[in-house]
Amino acid sequence: MPANKDPDTPGKWLCQFYFTDWTGARKKKKKRGFDTKREALEWEREFLKHQRADMSMKLSAFVDLYLEDMGHRLRASTLENKRFIYNLKIKPYLGEKPMNLVTSPDVRKWQNELMAAEHQEGKKYSPTYLKTVNNQLTALFNYAVKYYGLRENPCHKAGSMGKKNAEEMQFWTTEEYKKFREAVKDKPRSYMAFQLLYYTGMRIGELMALTKADVDLDAGTVTVSKSYNRLNGADVISPPKTPKSNRVIALPDFLCDELRAYLAQLYDLQKSDRIFPFTKYFLEHEMKRGCKVSGVKKIRLHDLRHSHASLLIELGFSPLLIAERLGHEKVETTLNTYSHLWPHKQDEVVAKLQGIELLGGSTMVLKNPVKQN
Figure: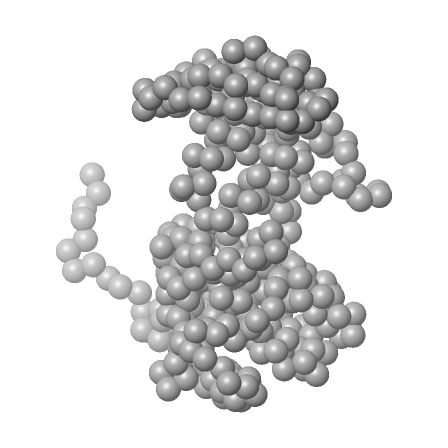
């Protein structure tokens, strides 16, 4: 149907038309509030392409379709991160181009612009962030190829940008951490939160989701079964990152004693109440404050998790145990992430093997040596 002037809103246009949805049912659609007839007709065209998932539809419209589908399969925080990247880093550059007309040179140009851009004065995007953004565009086109018949993914020929891992992993030694915690000891909830992060390796969202019911001080454990995020002004509790992230973490006695004292200070705390009722922003502020006062180098909040892993490696624990404590889905994840922290352990292995041999007094002699021809 053609677009018409809206009789109820002077100066505005509306469009109304029939379409067939994915079930085969015929339905009527009506949309008002357009400034021009052209805008109304263009919206109708894009809506119909969306229903057919026609690859001549604009990239921006296909992003909406993709996110709507993935919304049933991803955690709310993951979906929100995807939406943020698409809206700010991809749609402004490629959003008006039809999906089937985005070429590898288009992708290369987009990459070059992002690599040259500054998110703050004098500061360009990090290689790991560029890689993350590039992965989102690649995922979008992979989805179009797999489910909607797009002939090829232009990102594959264009190549990637950025790096998967940061060049240097940041972490604190135990000495550095102890200096830092003294600087935040004036705020009990900050002190206790950082103690748990450093000595358990929990993710930030896992820490902030902890409730009184998750803490068993008699057994000396905390149970991780959920994650907290603040999204669009609302508190969101979701399952943890992976199935293996559901875990029970054992606590040392000194940490149980400190946690018991901290919980005793929380007035009328119910079992379902969060024991750290703050957001990630609060912890980031406290991290900056503690580093400034103590003089300890600034690291990210997530690097406290790396610090815990580094501590366990230094204490000689196995990759399998570390993977279970951190909630990694596979032990390979632990090995790949922290492989650079293990090399010096090879010298310890050699030294211990040498010690065993020396204690034995002599090398092993075969009773029936094989004759050489």
